[in-house]
Each structure stands twice: as C-alpha cells, then as structure tokens.
Length: 401
Ligand code: GLA
Image 1 (spheres, protein in one colour):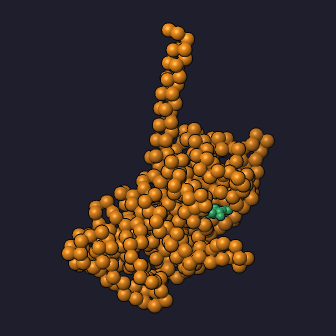
Image 2 (tube, helix red, strand yellow; image 1 turned 45 degrees about the vertical axis):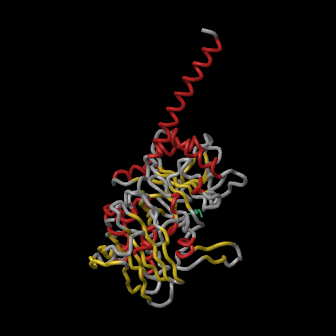
Image 3 (cartoon, helix red, strand yellow; image 1 turned 180 degrees about the horizontal axis):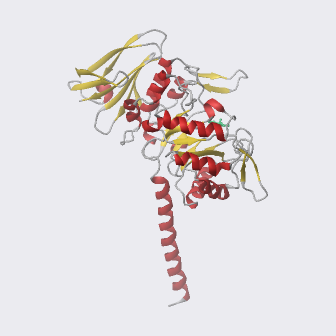
C-alpha cells in the first residue's frame, strides 16, 4: 500500500473513533434533565452567607419537609463558597465556612439521596468577585467530578470580550471529559440569546432573563438608573416567544423561585409557582426550608402543579390570550390535556374565561375541568371555562376533552 493510502486509512480510523467519542460525550449531557431540574439554591435567600452547617441543615430539611418526596433533588451552593486558587491552581473552598471541604459536603448530600450542585463563572471572577473558571475549565471539571458534583451553575460576570457560545461549549466539553454526568446550568441572563445555541452546546438549562427579585411587578430601572429589576410579571413577559426552544434535556430558565422569601403575598407566590410550572421551568426553591410556614410548604409541594412542570412530553406552556390585565396561559401535556393558568395581573378581582379555541380544541368539545389548587373536579364544560380570579392571583386547571 502506498504511504498516502496508509495515511488516509489512519485518518479515516481516527475520524471514526473521534466521532464515536463525540457521540458518547454528547450522550452524557443528552440524558440529563429530561424533565426540568428541581432542587434548592442558596442565592435568593442567603447570598454570600453560605456555610457547611447551613447547607447540611438545608439538605436535612429538604428530606424532612417532604420537599424531596415532592421531587426536589438538587442541593445547589451558589456564589461565595470559593476564596482562591492554591499553588497548583486548584480552586479552594472557604476554609472557615467549609472546614471539611467540598467533598465532605457532597458526601453528606448524597447520603440523603440528594444531588450536589456548585456554582462558578465563565469569566475571570464570579459575580461576587471570587475566582472564576476562565482558563481552568478542565482542571475545575476534574475537581468537581472528584467532589461528586452533579450540577454546575455557570455564571457570566467578568467575561469581557468572551464569546458566550464558545465559552459554554468549552465548559460542557470539560465536564464531559471528567466522565461524570453533570447538569450544566447556563447563567448568561439571556444576553446572547442562549435559547438559540444552548442546546447545541450541551446546556441543560439557560437563564432567559436578568435576576429575579422577590416582588410581583414588571421591569423597573434600579435606583441608580441602570437596567433592570425584574419582578415576576417582568420575567413572564420575557418568556413570550421562547417556548419552542425548550424540551427534554434543554430548558429555558426564568430564574430560581422566590416563594417564601417574604416579598410577596401567598396569593402572588401561588401565581409565581403556577406560572413557573406552566413554563416547564426548573423549580429551584430559594427559601429557608428549615423554617417554612405551612402555606409556603403547601405551595412548593403541590404535587398536581409539579406534575404539570414535570410532564414527560416536555412542552413549555405559552400565553395564548391577553385582554389587558387578564391572561390565559396553556401547556400541552402528554395525555393530550392542557394545563391552563387564568392570570389576573390587575388590582381587583375579575372573571376570566378560557375559550377552548385558545387551548387548541374545537369549541364544540366537552371537557372535564379539574382545579389543581383546590384538588377538585369541577365537572364537564363545553366551549369555555370561566372563573373568578383574585387580584394578582391565578386559577389553575387541567382541561381534558
Ligand atoms: C448573578 C446570577 C445570580 C447569582 C449571583 C451570584 O447575579 O445571575 O443568580 O448566581 O450572580 O453572585
């Protein structure tokens, strides 16, 4: 055989092998988060005040409160667990706050049947100014895998001129090379439209907006004039049109839950939770699970609403009708039924009607309606369903022809 043929044959073999390897790698991320991830994250309530004791207490509470039974599994430590890099460039956890190191925390979380998440950043520093992952992606991924990390939230601060798609592809490749299946949560705030490329780079979820605030309203400028603070209404408005990008293994992320953090009424928290479930959003609680009022517990663990979020068809719901402050949101479910949220954004109680045509059903069809908050079958309806909805409230039903 001529030398050039040998080279060509070797080239083909190596292409075949690297193709197989790529397939195997993409299979690692493709099988993660087939329904939207559910868990808890430290940021919304505790910000930088994280520690081994608090995290272990929260893991205990996740089990004891029934959150684990309701489907919450990831226990995620957000920013500020890390303080520096050592001489070997290993990322170093805060020795005061995590005296036994991150593997010990992960082991404890795993011993309860839960999964372990950490946070880093695609740039040189995290948003709180801690060491970021830039230039250390493969090194950090090996470290995370050794600690037993199951979920990485990767932020976008201090990234200067970095390309978002390339940066997230790089950390996904590093995570896959570690050999451990790790959910990748892209936290890029929607800046470079991650719904257009997040799935391709192996992201399992991507933030579609700036940070959520624990308030009901729309988008407002910050007091210093910069943009923008997002209440629940601001966030849902920014989901309109994104629904076709979500599906099993790759979800739009309208940010973590504020349910129970004190800035909204229980009616508003129920709406917040209902809408997130309708959007097939990741359900990452952000309140103090060690210390929850019964009303908050009942919102976060409503199994009928969670089932809407976790429906295996994996469709994100969408706004199907709007008349001023009155809106209808609907989500197709695997059994052909629809989850429907009747939302009243206004200041007074209102009657809202969902027409079957808005849900994609012919008007003449008779359908059973079940209230997912009252846990009650309401009977059969033809053509439409109407309900009185409290100010800032929802009525959430299942409509099944
Ligand atoms: C950004 C993220 C938040 C949180 C903080 C931590 O603002 O969007 O969710 O992780 O950083 O510093």
